[in-house]
Length: 265
Image (spheres, rainbow, N blue to C red):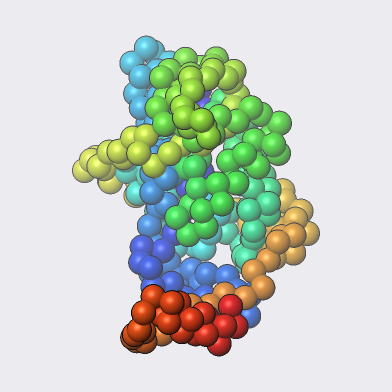
């Protein structure tokens, strides 16, 4: 059984820097961590590996990411926790991608690795909150998608059963494999790496591919392949202070109305 877990490097602090030209986050890698939702995705993949492995089945877990070269450090941390290998898509042509271009690049990476039985993604990234990557990858792979998984019930190599969130609550669903699954952050807690795992991660294979190596169309990658772009990003200005309104209720209401109208609201 082959499982691919998509992970993203996100800032570990709220003090992020924005590129004033491209209006995208500056990802220098200095304070990046694995997206918390993707950490949950990795843990579920490792639990499937443990369970199916105990039954005598060969299960391989590969972590896949698109990012700057420093992202390899995070992939090796995933390997230290139990993944088998990693693939990093790293090329300036991938930079500035929106969700559609990102999903396309990741789908190219998935096809490069071979047809998987299961692709697991975090429900969303904490620096974007779009929750679009998993379903878009499913569409590009023409595979069923089970989104917002709250609890994985079973995955036997031919199908999966899970409780997923909906607008009306939660429901138990079953889907045939191959499939794509996105998971909620509280679905599992990622295990700690072992000393043996850390040592093994240093020598584990992490393949790095550029656009050509991934077999991707440059026109569908990065800013060139992004139909949506951020026009402007800024930190909202905050004003302090206030005004004391005196008088009877009717007088206070009149003064408040004048203040609101004076603000152009």
